[in-house]
Length: 212
Image 1 (cartoon, rainbow, N blue to C red):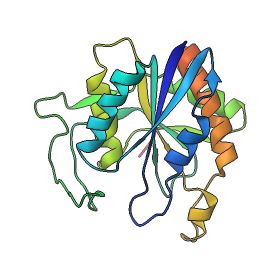
Image 2 (cartoon, one colour):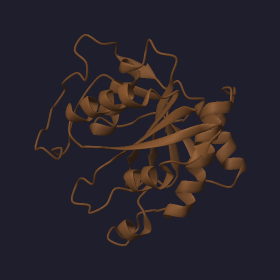
Image 3 (cartoon, rainbow, N blue to C red):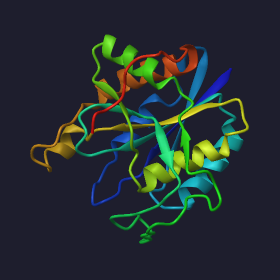
Image 4 (cartoon, rainbow, N blue to C red):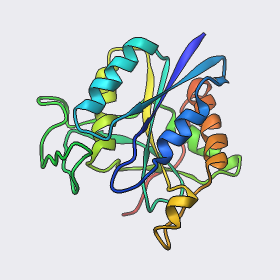
């Protein structure tokens, strides 16, 4: 059976939970589209996150990788289009590092694109009643760092890979008045479908751009 690697992060930024890990571990062990989900928690630490990811890739040997991260303030499941080769941290990571204008991979290309069928996934999620969109930026913190590093690590491998941001859980949003959230069961159901489409779908030629 093929493996689907799903990664989530440990809590950061003063939060006590991270919805990305709660989601990943809820899916761990499930069979989706004839493949087994393997969930791995990664540290919210520049460099170390990529080391742990590389170890997981070697151990799991996945056909699909979906890395997931928290994006407090977003209101939907955001399939990221592009990762850029820069670390520019507004806050320190969990080890206290705060790189500014440093490359993720020295000498690497300026950017990598997701190799997941992101527009087909977004279309499938919306048709099923889940809020979803194509995002044009994964930020410049550890999420983008991981996304770029992932695409760099698997660039010569027959692996579909990419990154998805998700909103706060309701219990987090309760501490951030006005912030949108999605409950864990909704995130699990939506991500189950996203993984199925990641395995089976071909990319769709659909509008997913932004005006600003």
